[in-house]
Length: 368
Image (spheres, rainbow, N blue to C red):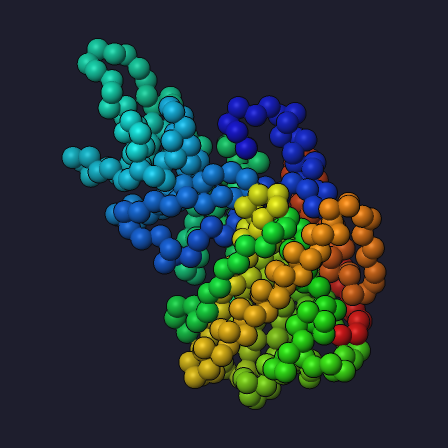
């Protein structure tokens, strides 16, 4: 949000964020990049929650995240470069007039000033975003105000094994993050959207029953044997067990164990703006299948994600008329939980109190 935004405007934006299909959750970590995307001495631009963000890694390895707008003449800082002075201090230099900014967002130098021109350049500020790197992922804290600071580090995911990710896929869905979340969590669309010989076939639907429990800022389908009509699990051999977790603001991961072997499939949703969501799919594994069958597994993963994206595009045709959406139990309970989690997240921040997870343990049943 702009640095000069009033408290009333911020409160209104926070209230909107709790409504389905509107606004964004703030005071939260969002995936901005993979570690390998940020090479030393390079800058790049990303859009997150409708805001332009400059990401960079200095030659010394320090990560920098600033609002990608120079306060002088609005040039994008990401089009500039890192500048190192005689003392070895690295700053980001604007490409237009060379104004330089530190990792804290404070202006460090204005080259056009001459001797005797009194000006406290350090009072000029660009918004700084807290940034953190762990498990090969770069997260940016999108605060409700420029002054807000993280109250916890980014999440740590189980099953990040086998070295670098075995698969990375990125797709931009033409939808608000809320529609993408409930679409990816939906348990009943598989037989219709993902029908292919290697996953589901016509007539393979059957009744399912899964246990769920609350987790940190989210919920989990507790560890269980995968459904027998999900054929791809057969590639792993043995007796796979899987657990699927969702966590605000838009993280979903499936952790599969087969004896001592592990597979982690992580999906991170990052809103670009109201109508576009970056979907990043990442998989780690120490299972031999991800070496022997990597091209095949990668192709299947890409197909899955794009099928979901295509369905979102079709859904947009109906959403243009702003219909009232029907949510049923038990197949849509996860979508209901997501909406309740969003409302509680925004309410807890607005009221300055701890977050209380509204999800209660339940066994859900559906046919797919």
